[in-house]
Length: 581
Ligand code: ASP
Image (cartoon, rainbow, N blue to C red):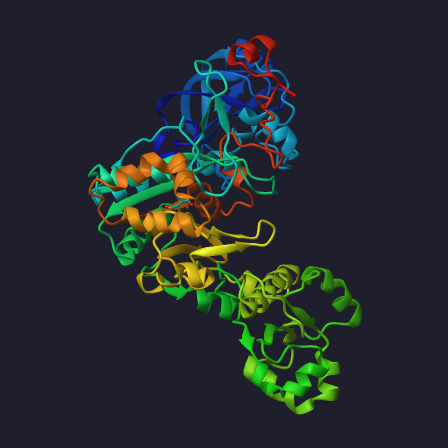
């Protein structure tokens, strides 16, 4: 291949096929770099050796596809190119065949300046010819292969589940596929194979995995893809530890493929600790912890600055960026946003004037050094009773603000630039989340997640306090995946549906097939799903998922290359019994 020849091949006759990456015409000598996915080799056409061939080469243009036969020759020391692996040799061509021409491309794969993304996506085949994209797609292949090998060696079977199915509840909207044979009826594309993988456990396939496409019609957001790939797995009779071990094992294999060594077991943290220490359920362990400094103040002091003495006062410390000017503080306030569950106190100098001793104490508690920036987030004097625990509300407001600040000051904020992979498992998530607009409880993960046995008695009396056997795997503040130990008893499953405000009839209408399956000897089981695109993105050091998905959609869910979605013909609609309003 074009990237394989080295000095030791000098003297050999070779055939190379590929694309014209660049042509340099020096008059009597023409150099052509021929490229394939392995790299490129310099071809030489010397007029004095073969005028007809030289003439033929002079007609080659960028991205023409050629085949060349020639002899490998060592370059002189002066002309060695140390920047490419084939830089010590060139191939003196004796025969050349033009396999295909190319229109002048809108951008060249070898261009040092990147075309804009719209162009790149429209002409994706040209973009994919670029070396970084070839690397990313190869990496993706190797990562998937490593996962398959790793899991297969542990006795997992890769089993396919249907794409045309009925909706599965992961919280987003479904993509629907109309049935022509049953007008007015629809299949749904799976948001995840959740129920199928659980049914595979009931079917006795005790270890399942699948590298599987999932579809979620969620609101558009910068880096979200309507179809994405999950590493989905499920196993029977597992403790959480066993699931963790399996995931840590294949992640280690994935990272190794990209040349990184990671060392399981990863640390673990309860959801409660994660919220209290990081104000978020996907903690970035590189950032300093939050500290509740309420006890540095008296209740009266807190009241004078409009903070609720009953709630935490959370100190955010951003190392080594100094106190901010008044203007900078004003600029930052929108990052905190309008909140009713928390209040920001960002002028520590002023606070120090009123309560010097308290500030000395709080600095000490927060471990703040002279040049560290400190801001406080506390609760408002009046708190409304809401679904979210009021103290969590304060921690989470602080956590969100801290991430914004860390991002804003990333260049001065050492922690954020720090390398390395900091993994953690977050465990014991709450079972339910309160939906303020709908005024009801929703599953925090999905309704098949098992509650903690010792919280079962709170299902009706205090749903917000019920913890689930649910876990997330988090890397440097990014959630890589989530999973849970599932409910395997039909009575408990029904109880959960009821706690979610579903009548038995509604539950039966939506999940009857599954409730029935649970009645036939369901083993305890659990699993997880991790985002493959995200993992490859991190391993590739890429900035967006689109850099590691061969044919992605834009942030607006459009495929610019094939131009989808598009309207369809009247005849097609009629066939499906569909009328567009
Ligand atoms: N099906 C879940 C998801 O896609 C993951 C799991 O619970 O295994 O988020």
